[in-house]
Length: 331
Ligand code: NAI
Image (cartoon, rainbow, N blue to C red; front, side, top):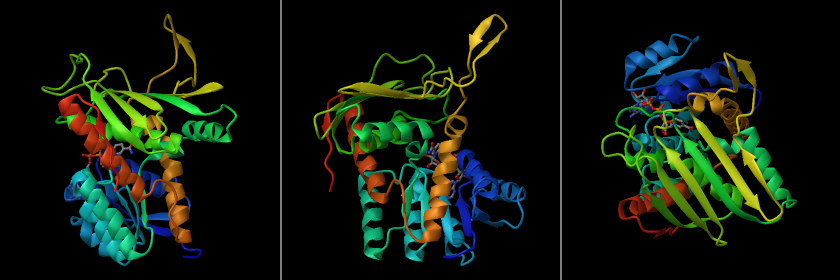
């Protein structure tokens, strides 16, 4: 592709899809929002009406097949990602697929194999933390070698609240999956074993939901990573990561932005959810995807990264059920 803007179609226009649609329409260079698809046609039409010349599809496969759509941003629920990503591969279209790539290891492997069989990399997976300026600076600092070998990572991932019906399994597959990718990326190694523990539950936990959870990853080198995940902390959206290396440590997510003194109190604000905390990361992720797609290449987290995360999460679900460490075996 040469000078023309990338014509982007967005599939799934719920919480995150509406956010991505607005980003493509208003903040991303060299991209145009041309279509949206959602089985909730009313929601899709209402969203499309906010922008000029955006076509509406009830069937996402029709959007993918439309020759006027160059590339596809998949923001539908995880259980329909496989069919939609496979359709993008068949159509030869670049795709940015929100996490999780698919719901389990077998389906993620089918996606990796289909992309390989097509002979061309087309898939970026929405692990946006890699594009967050703080995480990117942490990664660069660790990679410089100045701090010595990375030994330990400690993550905190607290959601203030989650939609009704959010289950214990979704805490692993939809929330912890971010730390799975962060740790594979920071260490540059695979996770070989995962343990998911069930501490004393918060009284905000949904009926029968194990909330919070604590996960322990064992890396290939023997290094360890811990993660505390809350579905409902009640407090605000908090994501922190501290990496401990031989000659120093690096922390991101302290939220030490604007500092206010007012009403007999001092301090800063805690965002409500990921859309505020990671706004820049999402912008940079989508811009990188658009730029790469226009050049005909893929950057960022690959289909294989999505597959590896699915394998780790599947083992994590087994550990959540049994309380025992589970080995992670990649194909
Ligand atoms: P949501 O429930 O708010 O919205 C989902 C939308 O998809 C709804 O409009 C629904 O009608 C539509 N939908 C249902 N079936 C569909 C189908 N077969 N094809 C197309 N659309 C369909 O969900 P949310 O929170 O927007 O999540 C969507 C995706 O984004 C999920 O994969 C989720 O894991 C991911 N996500 C990623 C985040 C990140 O930080 N990277 C943060 C939040 C969500």
